[in-house]
Image 1 (cartoon, rainbow, N blue to C red):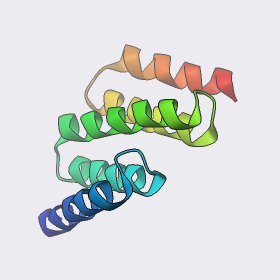
Image 2: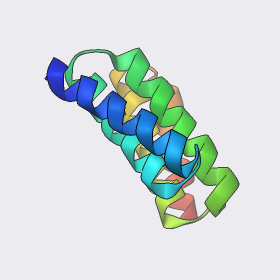
Image 3: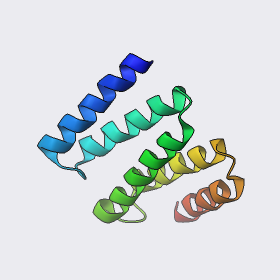
Length: 99
């Protein structure tokens, strides 16, 4: 998994450089890296990346866009994994209210 994570970092760097930080493909690459970090046990790193994805999606797509809500749900999972049950529950509630 470590090798895959390194490749995902390279993909993210290339995408950021060529497409821009908030391009949908770059955000997808960042989300993929977050998933890889979670699998490697870096829950804090995964959470930070997921938070960055959510903030960018809010700016570019709006609060209630389906992709933004999905990103919010992913961040809720990260917070749950980190033990922030109250924060995760609040994010989940926001997602459900927006649907």
